[in-house]
Image (cartoon, rainbow, N blue to C red; front, side):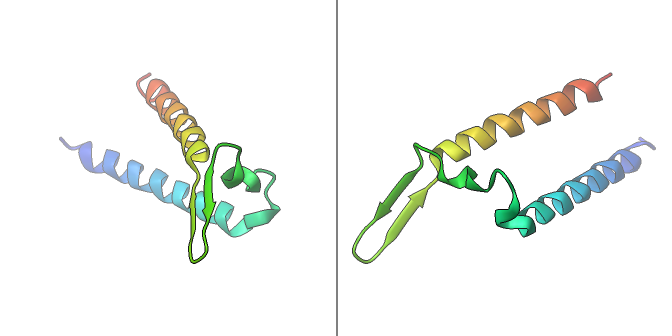
Length: 80
């Protein structure tokens, strides 16, 4: 059990680095080539008289598939 704190520490460091990278991507905003990711065909957008509803369903699906693939690759190569 001596290695458990070391493993938790590694996970926290990696999670922190990923959070910093995501934060930098969000700060870069519209200068990114994939900034239109939230406005894909198939995303639901409704503009009413007094409200606007927007749900990026296709964007969510694409991000889910991409994150699943990345996490699967990390898991696959982490076992070796």
